[in-house]
Length: 151
Image (cartoon, rainbow, N blue to C red):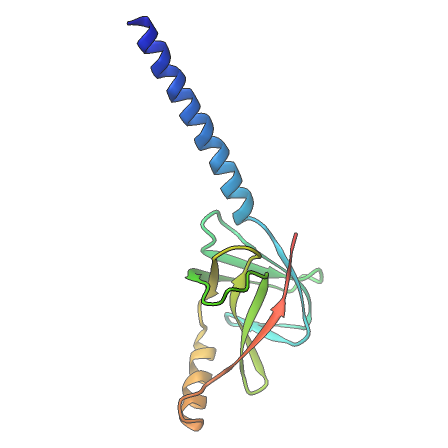
């Protein structure tokens, strides 16, 4: 009887240790920052950010909120949702939608991961998309990709 109790406790301890290690690894991955040089002004939510070097990271463990900031204090926070990769490329990158001369941050992809984060569209982006879609018979934006580095 004592032997069974000791075995049960040992299994419980091993399971808890594995769970703690897994949570630590997952947390480390979700908080990885991306660094990218964006060569144009762009919009995140309702805020226009100037061209420059930016850090992009999740503000919470789930990755639902993304923070974009540069060293000069320009920053924005926006909600995001998970999305699956459609291509085989596994590079870290920022994806922008371009409407005329206005760029909107649309997606954030970390290197080697099969899922990325899609940034919620602002009212301004939805409005521009509607206008251009009508003017161009269905095509409202161009996709622009900026390569990023994980740090």
